[in-house]
Figure 1 (cartoon, protein in one colour):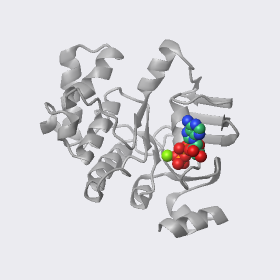
Figure 2: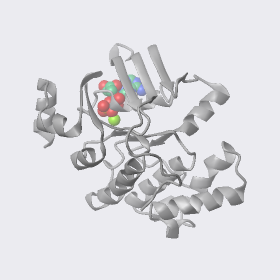
Figure 3: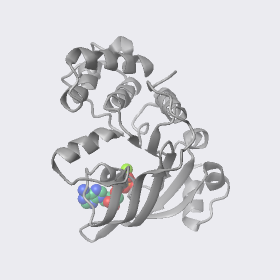
Length: 256
Ligand code: ADP
Ligand code: MG
């Protein structure tokens, strides 16, 4: 299955696409992100794992400015993220986001869910947007559901629509925040399969997940977070087979 139109190189090509430099964020007294330094290269797939409450979702949300930061910088393709205005809408189009809870528009059809953004932001004509959307829906395996409403689809189908909707904006990077953790077990694989093919086609991806199988197959790197800090960053095999920190050992002991 091919999810993208284009066939970029599948190995990370070396230049940094997303760079977080000394990023700090507080929620009141809680220092939720502590001096985060992270560079994601074009084509790289980074899996972020760590205990609940460690700041993984906050990290994702800062990258598309759903959350502000207190200090440090975040750049996308060398440009600092705009905090508001037109630049922000453009940024959001370049950073695709898939949430745990699908977040489809309940009162729009599957096709409309995918065409809305491209018509509004990319200024596509309805016919163009629909043609692209149908291709994307076919590629994630839900083309036959285009005229239905989200509630008529299974969780796994809805999440694949959410991925198609994000891809329709032609993002430079895709963020996934625990995309399979709200799914019934039998639907996890169909969503992970789409993500694995995206990874193989060279999409730059940041994926918060505890799916070790996905990490081992698709990730170039695993970043382990605890208490708002990046504690380890390593290849998946090295991280899972030979974690260095006590916190990572303890965490892996609980989930493996
Ligand atoms: P994770 O995704 O790793 O479970 P989160 O980024 O969701 O962690 O949360 C990190 C910490 O920040 C948690 O202690 C959480 O309760 C807190 N937090 C998250 N969002 C907010 C918010 N909007 N206001 C205050 N505290 C928050
Ligand atoms: Mg989270």
